[in-house]
Length: 352
Image 1 (tube, one colour):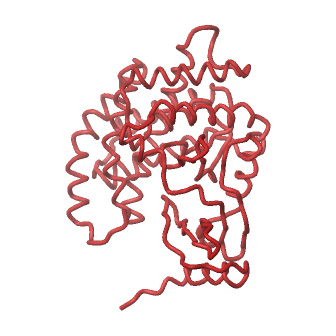
Image 2 (tube, rainbow, N blue to C red):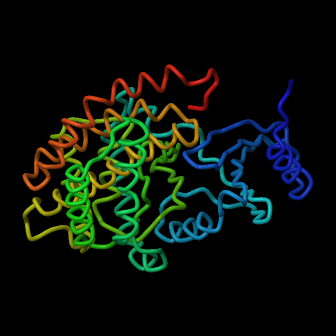
């Protein structure tokens, strides 16, 4: 029996009838970790467009359109918006191609050039976007804590089957409070919130095409940098990461931006690392939730690297030693078995 995709039918009709384009075909381009889907429309004239499908009862396209406008003002390359249907939840966008940074990075191709261009673009977002950041909601304590709360609920409880006692909760609460304080102590910038290799597109003219930015907030300077350099989908030796961190700090300082105390790199590196722990604790919860709530099992394969990032960083800061001990003894030993159990029960054809 053929399953009819009513959203795709409506989307195609919108392009043909409402926008008046002659379309050869519409193919699936990608889906992200939300309810949004993306299609590639092949127009009769040889051009292509990407069409966002954001069901209005599940996704609000308003933040996407607002953040796109703000990012355009910084000079970075975001998809040009060609048409919008707010009622149906469709957006016709410039096609930035189908090659995310992750593909060449995994092959080890032009790594320093790609990261160099990504750091230049991030510098533009953080420096030129200082006024634009005022139009964004704050990455405040409530948001930071709500994100980290995904860890005990979805990663520990649902995925690992780990029941937390009073002492466990105390360790996490102390760590969460410390990480919130660390984040709020950093300079505030425009934060993309998912600035990594799957959301940066390789463009023929150079420079990354930046996508998936609709959740932007005004928050800590270290957050997007750690999203890029401690990417949950690919990793690099610490020495190489620190070299890129120094490179980014120098870019910021050349633009007159406060990037840590004096000539010392220590404070900026601490901002980077602490933002990373907060982010990766959140991501552990999100990746587990994507399986247990949304049926997307592919992200479970990225849990070990994400957890390794947390353990490695905590080992570098004595004040995070209790969190490291807890994760190393309670969470890490259960992860492989939990992932294997999930794969064993996943139905065939489950979404990645």
